[in-house]
Length: 316
Image (tube, rainbow, N blue to C red):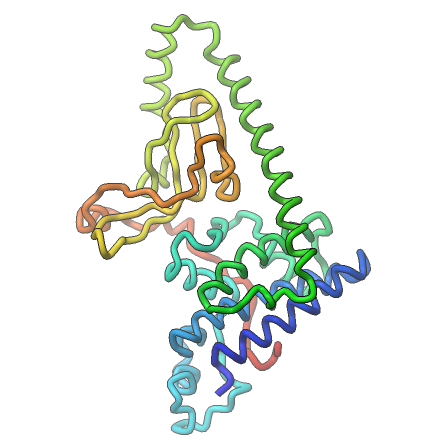
């Protein structure tokens, strides 16, 4: 059976080597670079799932594929090349649910996702956003590095591109710190322009009203209060929830911090860079039964498909 972790790890490493080789060749090969990096990431995500069980990487609605993954393909004469596997987005979603907080969360629907957008753009239309090439590689690295740890694979996976791997992370980290400082400076300016002319007593009254009337809306179910590090008002950490089965409580994996007073918005990759880092999981201190008994999913935030996938073999 080809739906096994070892096979997918080797495939991922092959595609990533090709991605860095194309990246080193310059702008004329960037399309190949981002495509190959996306495929490498998808295969390693599937390797993690397949190590648990091969059925976790096949399309759940395709019974023949499920039979094959269960080692019973002979019952219906299923060929490996006809097995339908899940897409990148679904593989990413399944892994983040198994490893909450260990790999960067996928952006919400309708938000840019360089990792998938570039791969799909090249595969379907021969196009990619040249301004997102670095972002694609950094996204792949931030997903793959923790997966290597989970799979017990050495950093030799990146050989002979270790130097480029380190340089990309270093430059991305420096750029992220600059962007964060810009956001904090703008938020402080907005706060002063809106509320700086009030005396302390009146400002407290106005801010109390603002905080009560303006909130995170549909994301309130997935939020926790947190002090804004730009204006010291009450802000909100928002993200995805999961159940800590040992504590039997609901935890929040932060994706965004928002302050509706000064308009500060800090994305997931920036949370850990704040003066007082906010990247760790938060205990919402809510009974599991109470929390999920009232939650109703927002249909506007359903995940979108990324790309039809007719089988792993077609891309190996």
